[in-house]
Image 1 (cartoon, rainbow, N blue to C red):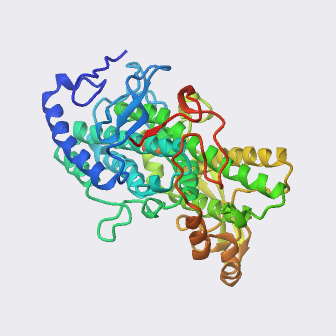
Image 2 (cartoon, rainbow, N blue to C red):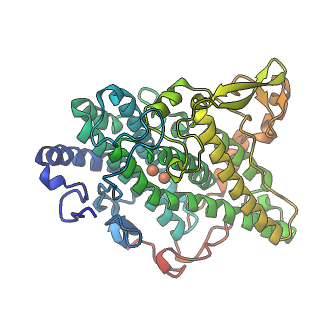
Image 3 (spheres, protein in one colour):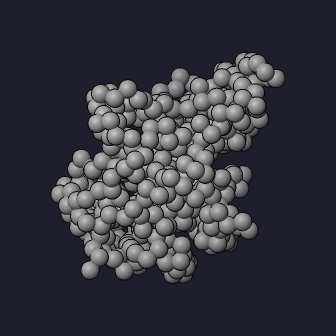
Length: 471
Ligand SMILES: [Fe+2]
Ligand SMILES: [Fe+2]
């Protein structure tokens, strides 16, 4: 078991005290991070006491401690999951070799790219969500938002630690650049497209935490298999926190659907009372699911093949031994691709289809969630249902990006797509309507009219708990 040092300026279980140079470098980065938080993090809430959990260890239970804290004083720490010194590389070309405690020279650039791309998403989402607290539908939701935000901040710390520790001057430059790019900045945007989309309503936020954080889960899970042990252990621990983010989204959308169903059942038009009509919720799902799918990258990718072959990025749950061939050789992945106005089957060597495989695991996960929402709608005895759009629909990346499909995945003409676009994806009018529903509710235990209350409070608190103190 690693020792947790909570007294240090930067709480950690990576032995920072024994590495003075690294500690000094990170302590120099820390004030820049706090400045960034104050400038680009949640606006106007830095002086409020918020009931937040903070990671204080890496054990199975009890890794998180709940208390009131002002967000700029949050104890962002560096934690790696406990490792297994005997662990061997378990996939790709180097199976059976000892895992790496240092970065092998030949993989240095590729590995740095993976870490920077992952790391960049963490502060990006905090920036995207910075205005949301002003329209929180309840104090409990406001708390959830801040919880997600501070933990994305910690995830940035996790990646910055790796850059500083293992990538020398280049790594330090990359860590600085993490605070210089900004979401939606025309001159210096965040690296991935979905992280430059504004999140200015809570419907967007809950879609983002359900679907975009869930892309994060799959990327982290693939990196948690990595032969580069510090990356594997870092991402393993991040997944603990990520679970709460996805749960926030899934419950949030579930509560919106629940409220809408209640209204429909009593014969009230949701729009007449500032709530969300079902078709509008579906359009938001369509938008965020497809933007999140784009984050998986091309279905046929030599880049993904190389990351797998070299042992940097595995398949989902590779370590659980669920794949017959840990080298992923001599097998093809069947990809259906558009050719003119018909679909044809193309075989891709499995290693090149690693992104497609990860996306398939993601789709299965999302399907489970949509089914759960639909079970609730069924229990409420309304006829409406939501669906998961096909992975071909509305894509900007990969093999489906240059053709047009309906949400069911059928190949259609551009004309047909344009004709229906407004019924499939949010329009300006829809976005304005959703914005008009966003009203802040700060009285403990009360909720805005467009969303059902939580079932239970966090950390066994009552629902009328004062999660954020305003005086
Ligand atoms: Fe994260
Ligand atoms: Fe997250």
